[in-house]
Length: 324
Image 1 (cartoon, rainbow, N blue to C red):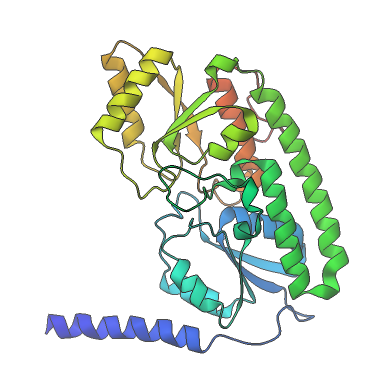
Image 2: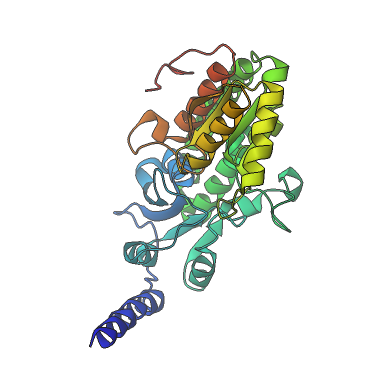
């Protein structure tokens, strides 16, 4: 009896997915009375669409605060949202590993764009632990994210060509803010002594940050959170911390702090005390509606926390005096 019930439920779920894919709406997007219905996988993309699209778009992010895009799988409500969307934007570069096959199937019926895969390959970073793939965490470099802004702008123009002037004007204003963020980041991070510019966090999400601001970046886990950190990795890093006298390490909002705390205990066993310098936003932004829940607020938070924890000079409330 129980097996028949479970089987019937599984059949219903599969039927829902198939129906959503088959009956995807083909109406003309962005008519004069309704905003363009956009679904984005990550909150970083969703925020950027909102900045460019303003009142002409209605945006939903599938992967919200505290969630890990590397392991995220679509829910029933996601399937419904995607089936109704006029435009679907995802990051690509294998960030949404569990969603990839589903999103690629949607390209048969929808306008679906993997924005980061339109970046020039020479700007992307490879990784020894990430065979034949690029590091997807490009949002950690504001100047590189500015290129994603242009890609999103051009996509919106293709879908709503009659609104090109509006999208270009909004984009120019947003890029000015990103330029200010880049200037602030470079200024405060440069106040950290060169020998202290070592950023150690839960996983390798900060390599573009390291390239932009001349930091040595170390993740306990690899580029993908699906990799595992063994006891030897923890032991080796504890030795490194003690030898280099690293003062602070960082946890991440979308990952458990278990490995970081094991690292701190390992360093303490060698007579070196290291603190948690703060919680960084890596694969997801802050809470919806908060300053840290915007792309600019996310990066402002990270830069300010890192600077202050590693001995540099930055205002406690950040670039715009808005940090919580």
